[in-house]
Length: 185
Image (tube, rainbow, N blue to C red; front, side, top):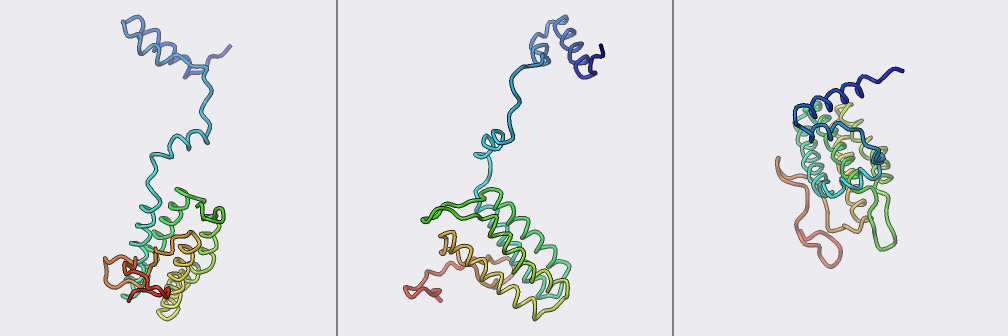
């Protein structure tokens, strides 16, 4: 009968530790019969350690503003880089909370992100690759409208993004909404 190398090394380590007065090491090397945790239970246990979705969205906001300023300077490589960073942050936000409860039930944020990726963000990427300022401007503005539509569907209409003003400035419109439903400006 062949004994697996890892088991043999564990056994030898345990025997040596016991012989030299270190029973805690011997116990640590003893195989257990407890069932291995499932991926689902591991994920549930880790859930409290995840950041809030807002952290990932703040990163997306910052990266997406940089897309605008890089393209404004015709630095298409940098614009593409920050578009990838934006998408990575959006995907992380969806991993943190793939489904959001709303009054009518819940919405599937993963499905919404997939739709945005295949439409507005795809058009934006194409404009960057083509290095087309006119197409980029239109696609960027459409993507902002799409972001606001997603926020409305998630019952977060108060999270309105806007065109960036200056490099380093966030996109979130902090003005109060007027009673007619328009922005406060």
